Image 1 (cartoon, rainbow, N blue to C red):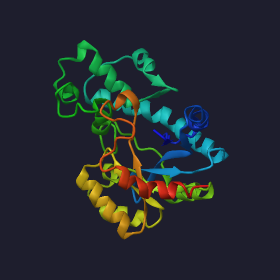
Image 2 (cartoon, rainbow, N blue to C red; image 1 turned 135 degrees about the vertical axis):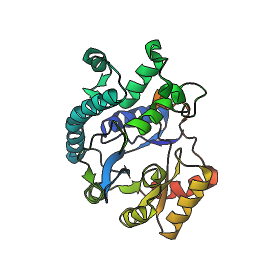
Image 3 (cartoon, one colour; image 1 turned 30 degrees about the horizontal axis):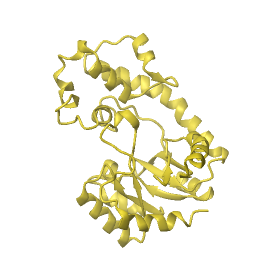
Length: 264
């Protein structure tokens, strides 16, 4: 890879180290972030590219989300365990925590890797050959812990308007990430949101080629910039490979490179 943007959820701490590593490898690293937001009651992810990661407001944002996520991830996990009639003691749960938070993908990995849960048929879709096995841990999150699911606990999300302003105030460009993941069936809400941002993530591993064409047409009709994201999550997404994104090729990359070169 010649260029990369690490857009962690609600955190820019990886960027400084990545920039230094990029210099050693001859890879350009772009300051970026992925922020959990809400717009018209829809939770979604907003990405910012070219931002000034040294702005202290990004540290405040990370603290805001971390403090409440410690509380809600424990609440959500216990709700899930109760609903699924699972008995896992707190010592085991604590062994799964990251910065005191229970990550649903890590819970999925624990359940799928311990033989005492082999008899649970509702885990079969996530096992090899199952309908949800391509990225099993992440699919487990979407099925049980995303908005409206049994392990979901409502939290306070930052408003889209405020976070778009923050990205712009820190010299960045604001994009709606992987729209099909959060706005499927809510195109009217998406269109209203797109009137407030700079661009749309057209090329995404969440999107089929037909969806790529759909969102590319939307971006073109609204004169929006287009971005691409692998949504790489390491071992939790074994089917995802950096730089391999549906519809992204040398030709379609040119329109992305153009606006990237204009970033300060």
